[in-house]
Figure 1 (cartoon, rainbow, N blue to C red):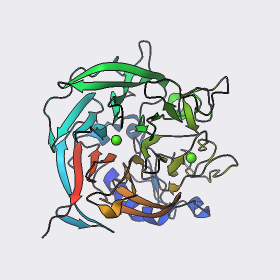
Figure 2: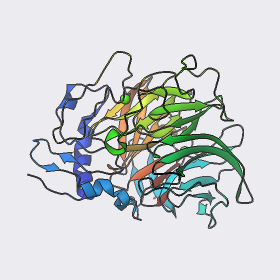
Figure 3: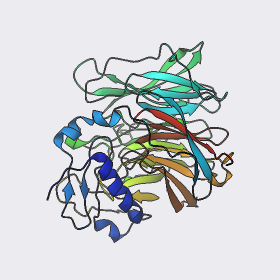
Amino acid sequence: MIARLSPRLTNCLAASFAFAFLLQNPTDAQAQSTIAKASDGENADIAVDPEGEETVWATQADVASPDKFFLPTIANLPNGNVASAVETFRAETVARLEQPYGMDFLPDGRLLVTEGTPGRLRIVEAGVLQSKPVDAIPLGPELSDHFKRRLLDVAVHPTNGWIYLTSAEGLETGPGARLVLSRGHIRDNQWVDGEILLQLDTPSTAGARIAFDPEGHVYVGTIDAEPEVEGGPNQAQDLSTPGGKILRLMPDGSVPPDNPFLDRQDAYPYVWAYGIRAPLGLAFDNKGRLWDSENGPRGGDELNLIQRGKNYGWPVITWGHPYDETPTVSRVDQEGMEQPVVSWTPSPAVAGAAYHHGGVFPNWEGSIFVTSLKQMTLYRITFDGDRMNLMETMLVGSDRLRDVDVDEAGRVYVITDGGTLFRLVPAEAD
Ligand SMILES: [Ca+2]
Ligand SMILES: [Ca+2]
């Protein structure tokens, strides 16, 4: 029997099953597909119930027109104090934005937020959205329909004061898009000193998260080609191409002399790690370790601990399933390829990631927060060394949570595809 369920209902269904199937270093239980959901949360809803009888498939129209996920919606946030596992918090709406995608804090505490599709950079000062976007943000040629967001991530360098941006622009000739990494400063609400550091012809302009290691190197996650969408081959295992990689640059955009593949003639010199599928979150923790949250194909979303020169397996190994009508058991491991630290099936469509340093929420110190799109939840994950210790699921059904960040005080900021910027602050006394 084939039925069409609303995305909201599908999400509720999936949410109720998801927790039982969160696996750490997964086992064969993975193969017993319960609810197998379409990946990426960008564009599809697919679910198979535990008996495999009722199947909910995305329509072609859903896949072709993901716009419905980006209609303005008010996030469904809890009222009043919320007692979570180890902290009691309150969710507080800060601002309404248009398709926010990325955010970071300036040293003076102001929050920078990108609005993806209109391509605007906004400033939130002392909890108030400034009415005027930053002027003169450099945007190239308009994008073809398939590529929507013009401005992607924003990140403030921890020591040199430069503000880094990823943006997407159309090609002068034909379809496709170019991913651009640039940097600049904001002076009198104007983007100045702009420099382009990297330009990549890319199969997809999602992802493109920016992170900095303690030495100040710049990292960017790039999405792999999807042959079923772009027609081209996967790039993730091909070291000569920029897609499906974690890239590493010097702050000025030059190639770091200790990047891992510089002795290989054919390798793209910025490659730091490969075999990546859809890195929608990138965050360093306080130990200088890099975490990548990425979408699997249908099942097999991952949180990876990214290390120099390592291969994270896509598309050779995955805990997800191919996009066809019969979920099949995937190949899940191979010598020389890294396993995720956390693997989610069904796919919640994980997105942004951020490290929590404590502050006003001391019991969250050391956690990694990961947002999800399809499951509309915020995960808090703790670790024992490089293994997951526990995962807490918060704000279930709130909205498609696109990205998360933590301010200096330890308040947790979240942006949603529906356009809400909210933050988690300490509970008020009753
Ligand atoms: Ca950020
Ligand atoms: Ca992987």
